[in-house]
Length: 625
Image (cartoon, rainbow, N blue to C red; front, side, top):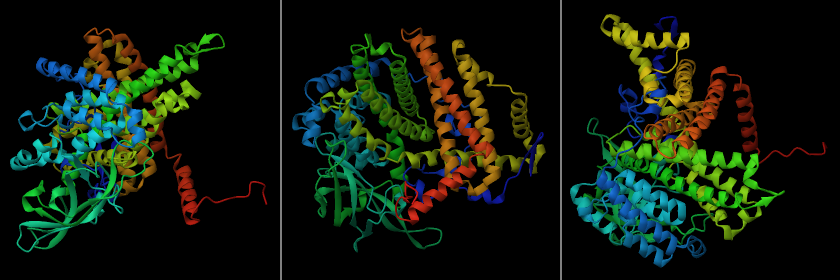
């Protein structure tokens, strides 16, 4: 039992088994959950709200990491990229061809779009994450099919070489992937989607020890039909230095098609992003030089997760651009369409749609540049925010484009308008690079584990209170503040512009309640909390809304402080967002805390089990006989 003031916390010893090793989280999970859970000074805002704390180091001031030279470089690239997409690339043509047209592909190579973040001395443009985000936003506003081709190449295809490659690997491969050779990321298999740990592809060392011999196959590989350089993941037998026993572990390899034994299936016929090449890839006795192990033998899972975590902010940037495109289409129509003697933008229904579309775009864009800015300043505590940005962006973009089609009415449904293609292209974003369902569990369970580690820390402190008075009194003070209803810490209030103080108070209240609910969940469920997915999803939604609120508060504060022309508009966006988001947070946390919906969740579970047992929807007779 742990007592802090009038609060009593019961910590079960079995809580130590609360881990993120569940295979269902494999595609999304961070690579070192135990270490992260025990970090005392984690800088992530999202991670800290699971302890009821507001950590602002990565939020305020809002991202402004580019120096004058970087801004000039970026502007030199922005104009040609805009011009290329306006004058050369034809997204409808790419879609109908089911491939990127030759002139568009050549233009992307000529502009350096396939090597945006490769160092200049190795053939790339040497951009940082913020510069990259800005250009990706332009791509997302114009052609998501081209965007996937570019992203599969550099955001994940050769990203592992950038992150984990030896100097020799970088010198050998990075000049090639910036000068015409395509790259691909090869992880998913027929029996392994989100469960990345269950891959069957296998690589075993040759008798002379100079090569690994790879056999297996991968599915749904973007650029798979023509990629020459691939980051491939396979099981390898690895000797445990402690026990001397051999155990299969995932290893990452740099594989060249020219090694031999690599082949591809025909392009998949997809719902959307038709311009991107997606195929199966087969490996039959492929000899891989031992020096092509990427990140060390047995470290493939770590390599894969870091690649995915590192690239997710780019999706938010791209889809922010997509939303801008859709909103422009909707506004152009709404301000010219006359119905009942009025322009339809004068009707409240249309105004609400446009305003909500704008809020979602603003939040998504704010997340993208907050994360890229943190990455550029050396942060390593951004994985939860990146996961949130991917979920938020993909769901928001779908809503925004769907609403744009609704505003255009029948015109929006026509292929010539372009929105139906964008809607088809968007659907995959909620699935690949970590499904949104898995990423929500990742956010919730990673945060809960971090909070659980803190409670265990308190438990240890009470075993020797004299030596841990600072920690004990700090915790007691925070809980006392909760009990008398005080709101945000002074440091947070001082960071926010005075005109946004009431919105900041909503964030503080949300975070405080959030921390209490997480503590309750740990006490009530202990290690079994991993099985409470009905609750974990709602906790993740509350975390997403909380992060969204703090990010726009920071951005709008920056606009107001700098007296930007858009400051008043940004203030209104932020106030409206925080008002509604805080209500959603409260509603989700109430569901978790009250337990009133547990019976409903139980019924939903039973209904689903019944349907699955019957192998299809149970069919009651609608006429009663």
